[in-house]
Image 1: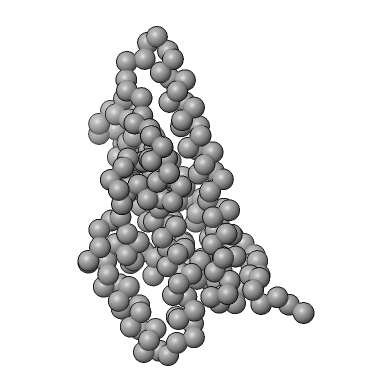
Image 2: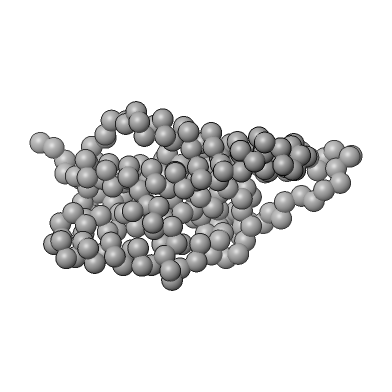
Length: 204
């Protein structure tokens, strides 16, 4: 007898994986060409080309806006499954996230050991690290150890939002669905960029 509380895995979608790879490449090119002014001179054609790579982040959001509801629908998600769903999502993003944090901390420490070090070490404290665990830095105006972590915070908020409202979208009347979607789109005008709602147009 099938256990209704266990989410069924879904197969990968090749076209989505290809689009995800393109988005990742765009972001990498953007940071390489525009992250440090010493790499390429201002006005260099490759730097100008790479300046459009920021759109890769929006593409990632659009992909999540499709693949998360799709996977929830395919796996027959219900409120009974919310723990399984969140554990599955967290298990995908947390390991590389924590490894990156550890590498940043290690590199920060090693760099300060050099007698030629003239910069400033990262402002690290236990509270800041605790905020990283829950993706809460933006809400407390604490700097991220890596500025790009803000995108993971938005993704995590989207997971929480889908866990909450997806059953309503599936099992409610057309009127209720339309109301939820309209409210979701309208919310982008009332929330700051700290919140998932600011990016609602990308995730819809």
